[in-house]
Image (tube, rainbow, N blue to C red; front, side, top):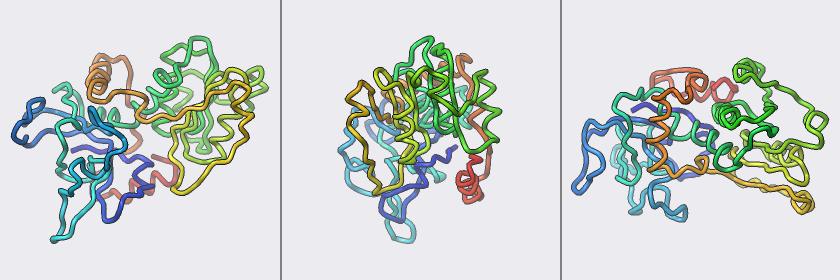
Length: 294
């Protein structure tokens, strides 16, 4: 099992104790009776949004039970994946078989980070060639948004982050990193993306898209129990405000295709990998996340 650390893992509201992580790739160790789509030895990516899954369901386990225990004590699941573990138990509808030659340490990012950002640009916002885009936050998801915007042929990407170490990576996509948006975009960008999870940047992202035709997409997960107040006039003039989960992809169908595209070198995941750590250094990984170096 290979797992990535996502900021969502750091904002868990699931009952404790819990095994976190939802971005992973692994190899099937065994399959239960009646399972037909995967077999032992298959490489798979567990699905954040399983096939035919309703978000109203309990995210611990579709059957309302728990499958992890430690010293007789029950351990909770996290969105049905819980990949910070040597083994995980999942429903057949919640895993996608992928190319046997795919490198797990890279394609695990398709389980959340890459798909969420890339899809938010090309599927949710549907950015258009020649348009202008602003990206608030240059973590892995933010950089994936940049990749999606670039692939769609936008004219300008304005990316913002407080961590200067991330600027060089964004520049690799040959787009400028600028601060003053409206002065440079004739009243605002066509598309904006909030990938931080702060209420103030969510509002800034909405404000900086064009008031009559701009689209703003929220990807960042805010701290629990925070509410956002806004003036409805910001939308009445013509702006569109959207949210995105997993970039709008249908995971059981889309994940294998995204892996195939990666194997065909349609896109690279290298820029999204900042550190590779053994599991015993997981706390160091979260420290890197908190410092903005993840």
